[in-house]
Image (cartoon, rainbow, N blue to C red; front, side):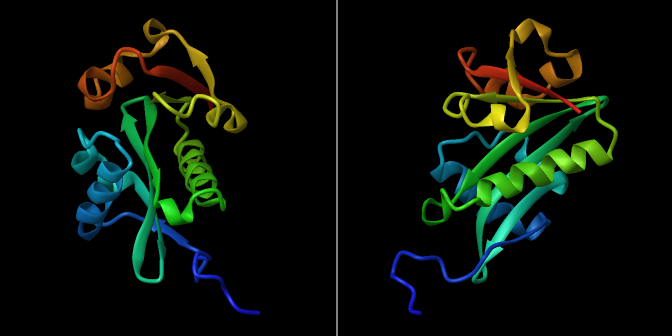
Length: 153
């Protein structure tokens, strides 16, 4: 069987992000229209997807004392709709569960229909705990019009 020119050659492998991944993570987030605020500081708890020697996806877990923020979920266009994003989000949720985090939060302007399949539900901004509201993403990076969602762990 031959692969078409648009079929990705390798299944991406998920792994923890390293400091060396920062430029590729930032490039992928920028290309996806996502903010970079706080990425450098939270990179140690990010997960990346790598295939054919290239970073093709990213998802972040930003731990905020007691709670955490799921952030910076992005997949390279040629790897979308084949499960890379789903695998990244599931890995971050599993990490939050393993750490005993009671609830995971996110902000989105485009994916409010995607995240309910992972157990997230919309909540009012005022219901978000103070430790999550103190993040750069919550304070300045995402607009006030972003949908806020919560997933109890």
